[in-house]
Image (cartoon, rainbow, N blue to C red):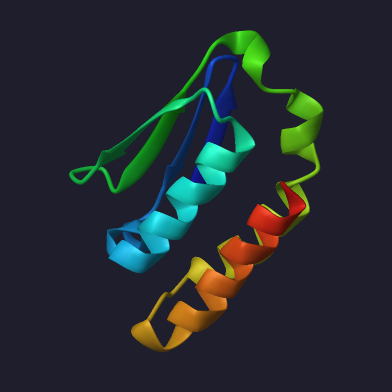
Length: 98
C-alpha cells in the first residue's frame, strides 16, 4: 500500500482498492479528512487522489493517522478476499480517528 502527502493533495494506491467496498470506504475516509477535496479514482493505477487547497488540511491531523495506516498496510499486504473484513475494519478505525 502506497500513501503520500504533498501540500494540496494526498494519494492512496494499492490493488486492494479495486474491490468496490474497500474503495468506497477509503473514499469516505478521504472525504471526511478533507471535505473540500476533489477526490478521483484512477482504475489504471488503483489509486485514489484527493486534491484540495494547501491550507485546507492540517498536517498534524495526518501525522496522527500514520500508526493506523501502518496497521492497515500490514493487512493489505498479501491481500486475499478472506482478509476483506479485516481491511474494512482497519479503514473504519481510520475513519473513526478522523
